[in-house]
Length: 71
View (cartoon, rainbow, N blue to C red):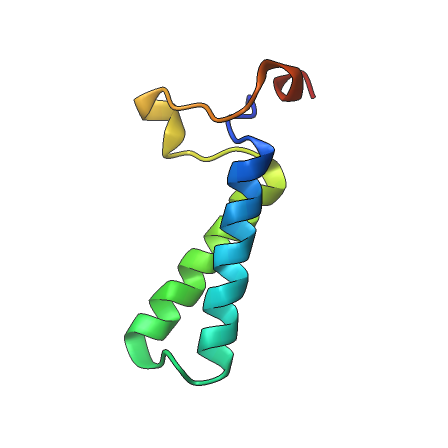
């Protein structure tokens, strides 16, 4: 599995996930929408940790610089 996410992409995903988690746990977003967004936030964190987004692959997207791709 080649890396296809750059560091800025990963950082933005983690920030969005943190914001969703804060909104969920403070009760701002609740119910089914809250749970769906919380699961999506978990997916964002997971893809950020492994630097690979499965949705980028079929579309040929790559936000990773060539220097970062080596690892």
